[in-house]
Amino acid sequence: MKIVLNKDTMKIEKEQDVVPFRNRVKEYAVKIGMSLVNQTKLITAASELVRNMLKYANGGVVLIEVISQGRDNGIRLTFQDKGPGIGDIALAMKDGYSSGKSLGIGLPGAKRLVNEFDIKSIVGEGTTVTIIKWKNG
Amino acid sequence: MKTDISKLLQKKRKQILETWMTIQLSDESLRDNLMSNEDLQEQSNELLDELLGTLNDKNIKDSGSADFDRVREVLSGISISRARQGYTPRDTGFYVFSLKDALLQTLQQEIKDDPEFLFQTSVYLNKLMDAFGITTFETFIQGREDVILRQTSEIAEISTPVIRVWDGILALPIIGTLDSARTQVVMENLLQEIVESGSTIAILDISGVPAVDSLVAQHLIKTVSATKLMGAECIISGIRPEIAQTVVHLGIDLSHVVTKATMASALRYAFNVMRLEIKKIQKEKADN
Amino acid sequence: MDRIPILRMGKFLLVTIQIDLYDRLATNLETDLVQMVNKTGAKGVLIDISALSIVDSFMGRILGNIGSMSKIMDAETVVVGMQPAVAITLIELGLELKGVHTALNVERGMDLLMHKIDLTDETVQDEDSTE
Image (spheres, rainbow over the protein chains, first blue to last red):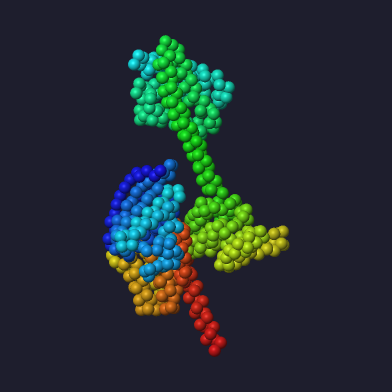
């Protein structure tokens, strides 16, 4: 069972929001005592996802939560946008695939950097990506 | 209600404690080497105080009641410290259940004339103490797990030493299975040491790794790539014949990684890269 | 601030990234650097990222681009000072920064650039002498 200890939301509307957002995530990660490597992984994954959100959906909202499960603490980030959505999630999750001009490692790369990764998308309505990084994960 | 249970027990507090202590001390498995009888008495006293202080006619029926939070806290504290001190689960279980015996014995003596009430109260008390027993075990195991977790991280820490074999050359002998958690530690230690020592070459010796499968190989390749990103070179040494066989049979590509059979040849390679030369000194000079 | 300063040191260009970059800043850097390589005829580009706490795929791509673009303009690129946590993350992400050289710190990076440029100069001389 996952218990939410702390909650925060941030609106992402322009690329200048990315750096403050990363700093906010870092603050929370530092607060729960996450190791530097795990912090870096989490923030990098967050950066990938937030960038996707800006590129494909012109921004959205990110929910930052400090959660606990048993003896472990972690950070859960939920990225919600009202963009075009992703038609074929399996394809989007494949390394090297990109509908825009990028390296196409954003989604699969972000998944490799975190402990839990969940993506839901409805074409025409939007996409929600949830990631969890445990303190010692 | 004919008799107020909590008042009755409060009144008999001293007697309960005595009975409890007697039961505990009479148990032949008592670990008086781990804790003195005085300490045990004090510990028992504290728990009994908390329990009798909170117990009333209502919450006796509800073992989950928040009234008992403090009792559970004390109990957890005792349980965790016992787990760390090396008590067996039996010792700890006996500790709580002997309190139940003491309580029930006292009840039996005090409520002789009302069997129905005695029965009812005993059932409640039984349930309550069982719930506390469960709490005790949960925290006992948790205490043990904490110990295991700490030891695991200690093993990971000490089993991946980074050695400065030469100015600018690091060596990292890996002994034991390489899983992802361990690779993480290896990578972190190695990269950190590279930064601190300003080394340009790192030798990863895997002669102590029992088996290399594709996952382990992947971990090794990751470490090599990360080292490269930092601007240093990583050599893998200690490739035993069996390892070479499995690597090729599994179709793992190690062609872009510098591999050497022994630590010595890896070191020689490193000297070469750093343009260092080792010479034997003239014998006569040493004799003079 | 919307531009990262580029310093010129002899045959080299030196860039020290001191703040976390947002996208515009990074793309500007790419354009500015390539223009500077062209204008100064620099033989080497040294980018110090020791102050960067993260490098994501976008930033990684910019670094790779700078490397490849400089390469076809006959300049070598060295990225120096990557933090261990950043290196581990990049590998996990699947980025290997092909096309750029790496070094531990600015000093080593300079050595590497000198070495690379010496080598290319020597080959030119060799070719001259054989003719």
